[in-house]
Length: 454
Picture 1 (cartoon, rainbow, N blue to C red):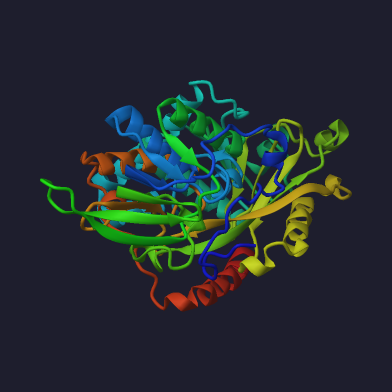
Picture 2: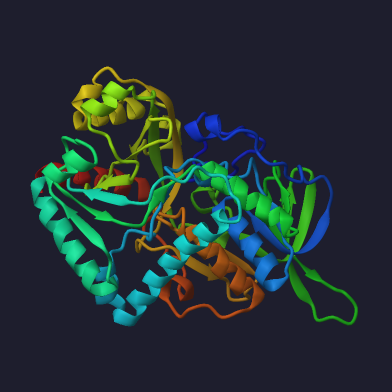
């Protein structure tokens, strides 16, 4: 499998992974095909995932700027089409209490409002007619051991106080009776918002809206080389053009947006070099559960569910009564397809629901997410304000990436954005960057100990 720390190219024209989403999504919308000529544009966007499509859509709708999107493979071929489809008011891994301590009340609330705006933007775009199989609202955080239930209750109390959240406190017995009998759950809290959907169909919906707004999207068009040149038009001040070399055409652009996140090739551009840690997430989708299996597990809910482990597991019941179950995957791309990781997830799922002892999985796939050093996403640009990026969603970017794209559009158009660290500061460079994976391995070992004993 492609590895962003080792490979300097994603390749091109690769099919979608054999995921459940690709299996049920149907026929993808048509794009403008592979770029086969040299062109000059005002704004080029690299990456046709949530971030890139949102940036293109909002530039066209809100600023009247038509863009060209370049995608190495297919729309949402990367993380946007491989994730679990959780729509949550969150991004990154930093808690709101930590934000409040680090930056103060006003900044913390400003970031919270941006996360909320991301969810509302997704809902509004879906309301325009995107068919993406949204399920009932509700997000359940389950305690994976008794001590963590106290921690969840403290979190609920703090968020009720800070944001006026309507959060249910659910005992183990109530959880088993009203939602699902997860034997690894020792109580939970439940948010009224948050929901699950088909993330690939969501991205295809964004593509259609962007194309309707006049956006050009070239798939099978990987950027293999990036250079610069000075424009020398008579009567105009010299301007630096970004020159993007693709296999069958060259794109010259005044401004470029990097919207590749966890699928940023090694040494792709100095602005993002060593700024993130790509981490593999693994997902399985089981066979459809029979009614007697659902009854034996009392699996009543279609809410999205996540536990409190440092190495988190997450799951949801899909519309056809399959269970999606996800967690960490391999460390390197070379090991990504090893069935050990999918089998490990299935084994954990069966400890949560013992009546499913004979259950098998029908789909297994993995994908890269982008971790930032400070546990927060960043939307930033170079000093010349002609190269922009949004990265570091830390595995929680399905909704916020759309808000990030909206803010990228503002930045590209020269419009001011909120004065928040996620928009005003760059991603932090990883120290000892070549050793990032050593640190990741160490964290995984720590996580195992913490989740079991601490």
